[in-house]
Every structure is written in C-alpha cells, then in structure tokens.
Length: 114
Image (cartoon, rainbow, N blue to C red; front, side, top):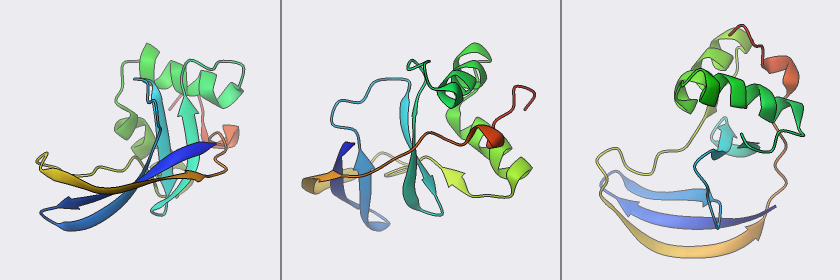
C-alpha cells in the first residue's frame, strides 16, 4: 500500500506520520506500539474485520478512538490513531511517498459485543 510519510513541526516537536494520499472519512491507519500496523476501511466490506469495524464505528456511531480503546482493554494491546497536534498548530516540513504493508485488524480482536 502506498502511503505518504509526512514530517510536521508542532509545538511539542517534530512528528512523522504515515498518511493516506487520498484519505476518505471512514479510512484510518492504525498504529500498534507507535508503528503503523493496520489499515481500516469501513466501506470495504469484503474483508470481515472491516465489516466488523463498520458495525462498531459507523452503525454504533462510536469514534474510532473509543473503539480502539475497547479493543486495547479487552486484548491487552496498544492500538491508536496518530494525532499530529492537539491544538491544531502544525507546519508540514517534508513529505515522501513510501510503500508499507498494512493488514486489516485481526478478527479475533474484534467482537460485535464490544
């Protein structure tokens, strides 16, 4: 999968974030232990874990951060969606295109009864 590695300068320092070149509203790059590991696309329903995330995020109207927090507690892992700046002040310094292999979130971590 082709991603954009963007370097930002923020008040808290320099941050490097992987981003989708053409991001849509229901797509996220999910980090595990501060490294990009999974890709969630809630409208690509042919992948079972995406369909389960669709149910949890879109149907239940829960923010992705809340869903990831529930998954983290249940499975004792550290999933997150990166935030560039909490107050919105950021300046893009550099951006390069890179190829990264991201998998869907494992189905065993997801459960309709979260």
